Length: 224
Image (cartoon, rainbow, N blue to C red; front, side, top):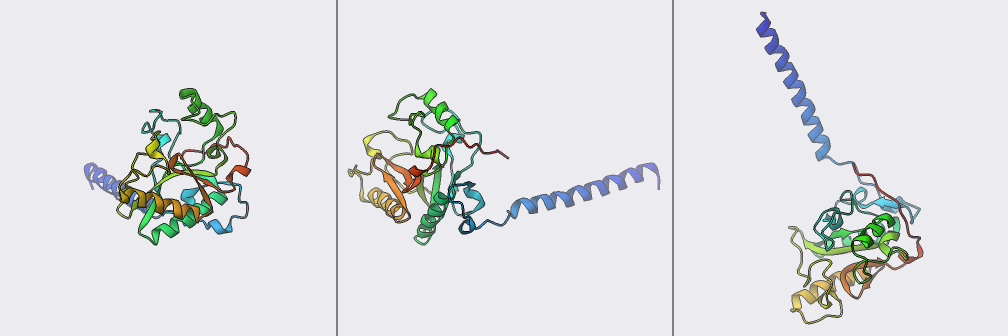
């Protein structure tokens, strides 16, 4: 075998090995790690990543992008951490909704206190951002901002966008067509039935009923 043939043979072996390993990497990526069972978590106040316990949610973490009312990215990455008890209740709610043909889409979850301070610095107005001196239930890991989507991923019409600060965003506003009222009612009824409380002025915001008993936290997650 001449020198050129040897080079060709080595290149072929290298390409074959590379392709084989690439296939393995793709396979590992496509087959996610087995989900953990939230029911086995005994400490209800520990912070956990929702993605580790369910693949049935849709994520659109608004503050990990510029697509929010601040027009600034304040989260380092799209991650949804919550207290274990909040995750348990949220999975319960989503299971009920899936049976009706819908899924929960998540806009916001736990928010570290440092990020609350950052948001307050950008928008120091309690009408839009909770004052970090008191903290919000988002800082306690007991609040979620959500909407509903059908199985194709299309959002249900809720009358306003997320983080719309006007009277139309309120649960008390009823000057909508029946479809919008029904969509809001469906989300609210399921969430209330799953240990959450609604927030009158924001149709998307739900607090775990006992979430305010936890301390404000500054726990920070890692971005992989």
